[in-house]
Image (cartoon, rainbow over all chains, first blue to last red; front, side):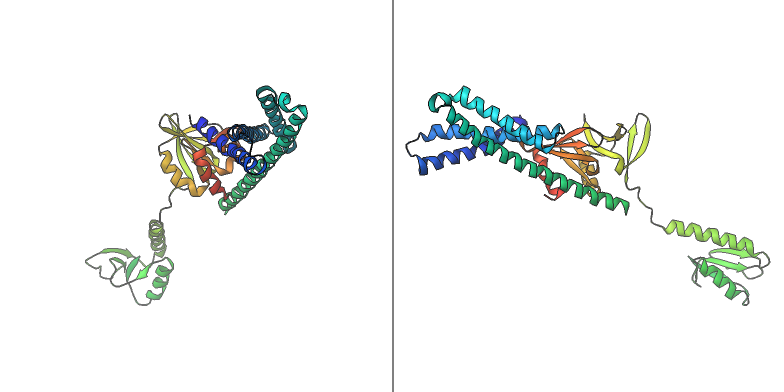
Length: 143
Length: 188
């Protein structure tokens, strides 16, 4: 139950970015758009991009793969999930053509890359701090 | 230790020196007396009568008294840096540096060392959390306290949790509710 709650909190917090994008689009770019529908779509997209990218990065690191592989895993996972979302669920290729699918995939790949980049910074930072703490503790024990 | 010396005047400087070098304080108010043979023995207190012809016995006795007194005066050092763990019918002292993590199972607290041995402890996890915090141990979830020195790698895990790979190849999770405290402890 706790895990589900955590997952929901995570998904909602990153999904809200999509909601903000939908609001921006509605108020500044295209006021004729169905705000509710685009909010829902963007919400799902941003939740998927952030969650899948982050999960794939963590999984690659957990398996002991180097950072480059972790980035690639993150982008691959992200690409596959967005592709499924676009082609199978939303049928974007029917409404806007394959060109639109390609562009959306490209944009989501950039987003996925950014998520992996920040995950990597966090990973390096937390392990650097761990080593500092361990040095401080072992230094104190040798005194 | 206070001592009162009763002896011939020509022996006094030598004996005073012997006593002072052994940590005794000369005082007339003392209840321990060092009395030369043939001198009157005080009626109160404890008297040690010595013969100036055999000083070696007196010196040995003074050395022993002095040693025992200094040992007693020393504050007793608590057994720090260890926990007393029970495995089967045996009790063993386990140094903090050998403890990888402490965990609870069915209300009992266990600790794990590099040799994958589980020792049962008498202390409660909550008490251990407080007493071991300054030694580099930190609570990571409801049932586990981990030794920072035995964390090999931290992996950001799903839903704001963290996965710790330990030096004994085991993995433990830092739960969401303890992740913030853990990061603060690391200085993040």
